[in-house]
Image 1 (cartoon, rainbow, N blue to C red):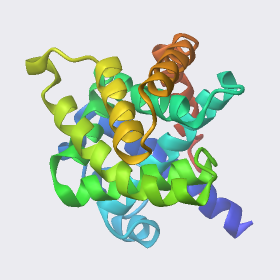
Image 2: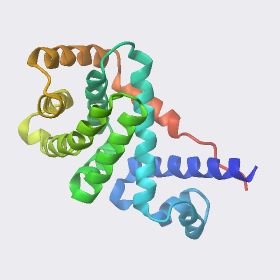
Image 3: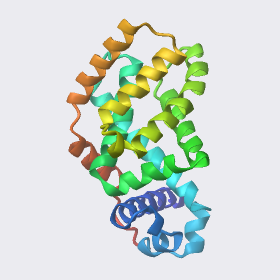
Length: 223
């Protein structure tokens, strides 16, 4: 019973954090505010999440898993790279339609420590989803993901200035990954991009956002 309550408490904390960030922006959300929103003390909150960065990382990890589920629902035999491009596209698109998620993305892209953390999370997600099953793929992607993530980060941060959209950036990312780290031929890369576009057309960003909201939704705990 206690374990189940602890799991529900964690979900409630994540839910409240997600809502607070979307309403107020990441910088204005403190552990104290999260604790108050969850009707618990800050010390109890810190027994679950010692630092804000730990909480944000779990929130993003949950978001990654939810996006992965959305992709798997529409993906059948699409190749790993097409799924990866679609995944990157979804993240960036959600940032363009939701200010709170945009702040989460920009925070992750703002400094190297956070970017490294998100790069590792992306690699782990790809590995857990078995998108790159061969051993050599694991080795190559371990080096390629941070490089691609940092390039996509710079493009996302300056997307208005450079007049880029999420599709432009996600295509850049997958081309870089496939050409530079997997030595794929142009014909294979172009076919992958077309495959990813078909996947993307099946995914409505607003519905994906609704799915995220449902993922984070949690009934308040009655103590």
